[in-house]
Length: 443
Picture (cartoon, rainbow, N blue to C red):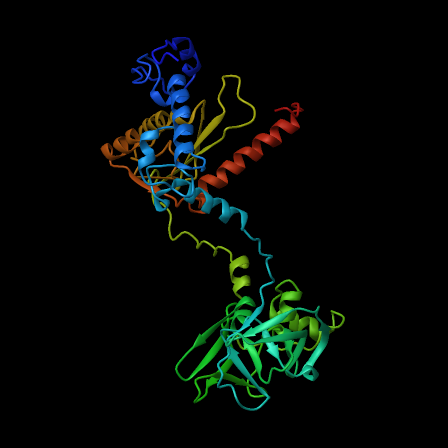
């Protein structure tokens, strides 16, 4: 076979490759492909490999067509030459495939309740241990639970040493007369009563630990509802029958205060006296009657005091305000009105405006008119903080003529009550005259 045979007619097979080779093939000396892609070179190498295998007895399959590499080290994983087993890329690909094939799925198990009570808890059964590592109130004596409910099988509680115990049910524990703790778990084999700090905090209280004891305070009333003592074994206990505990039930007077819509205790006492509410017990007024929710929702603004004095001469104090826009415009297109009221005589001047920015021009006209007629000067101008009264030109004009400015507090119209009241009077007078004259309701 002619080794220099022209194979340019095969070059079209490689035109669709992503990276086209423009060099010369060292096997057939043609351009456009490499020796590894050359058809003539592959045919020659295939014959040489078969010949050498027949002579040497090598029967392993190889993907390397270059006979010159057969003198190099051979990989036992891919049967190619030029690299060792530790450098073979096929080994890493097989490792990933095996990891993907051996992937396992775990079923999510229910999270058990936790109990981190210390192991020094030894003592009487009538003591309640205040435990910050316990997720729920727990008790080991079923006879002390009221409204007992059996729980489904499989629920367990895990102690600090990872020892599991079975939760048989839950109920209400009687802590003291008219005081109960709700949602208490009955754990089989538990020898101590546990009060959960987490559960107490979820019920609107905070637990404060100190060196000699601990306290549980109601966030709503600020009252201390539990006082625990610290034992020599560094445990905090609440002895049953010594302190009151409001873990799931408030005092009866606060309970009825909330049931009656945060009614004041004086009204509740009156209802008890006259038996106005059926089933209402005899409620006593507590020592501390401050309710956080009542203070937040029932607070009102205090009454504004009467004005301390009034003007002693005309134009000493002028009240002004802008009213509008009105639903119906005048025939000339005005939809605002501005009032100027003399505090001494309560004489009123009224001006109509198309826009609020005309207030400054109206004030200049008013000032020139009243000062010319009364031979008095305007001393003070009182208004709100509307933009029509706080412009730079308004301030400059008043400063130039020595007029003092007084402004009311934002969203407090009571401080400019003279002008606000006159606005109401003007509108009432207008509506009354329109109604009497038979003007259509559209006006």
